Length: 233
Image (cartoon, rainbow, N blue to C red; front, side, top):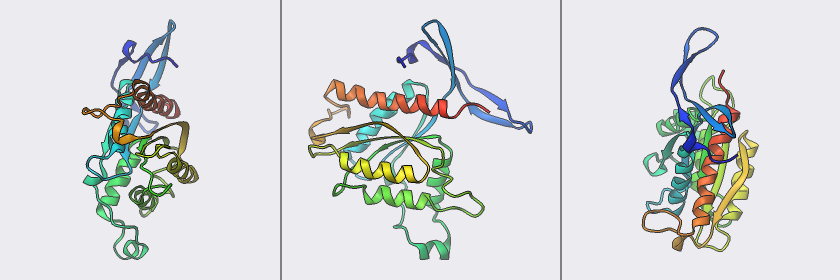
C-alpha cells in the first residue's frame, strides 16, 4: 500500500456495543487511494526496547518506528523499562505475594494495546534478560484471566541495532520464536542495523537515509496491519 497518511483524515467517535454500552477511542481513518475511500480503525500500539540502558541504540531505533506508526494514524505509547523495573521472575514470589505491582502495570499496558513495536538488543546471540523477563512475567495470568491474555492475537514488528556486523539479527530469531509460540502474530518485515554506535546522528535519527526510511516503514506497516486485524465491532 502506498503511504497516503498526508491525504487522509482522522475522526473520533464512540460506538455502541450489543448491550448498549459505549466502546470509546475508536478512531476511524478514511483515506482516498486511487479515487476510492479506504476505512480502517486506528491501531493502538505499545512501543519498547529490550534494554534499560539510558543511551540505548535500540531505544533510538524504536522511537524512529514510532514516528512511522504515528504518521499512519496509530495511537502509540512508548514504554521505557527503566521507568518500570521488574524483579527477576520467581515462582515462589508469585505464589506468596501474587503478581508485583509493576507487573500488573505492564500487563495493563499490553492488554490496552493491539500491536507491539519491539527493538531487541542481542546478548550472546539471543534475547536480552530484561526482555525475556518482561515476557515471562506478562505471561502469568491474574485470577480469572484467560491464558496469555497479554499476547493472544496481538500483532508485532521486530527490529534490532547492534555494534556487530549482523545488527542483532541472531537475537531476532529467538524473539520471533518466543512470541509466535505464545500467540503473537509477528510480521515477517524486520530490520537489523549493524555498526549501530556509528549509525545514529545527534538527533537520534539514522544517518543512512535508506535505513531511516526502512524503520519508518516498519512502524507504518504495523499500524496498517494491526488496524486491519482489529476491525470495529
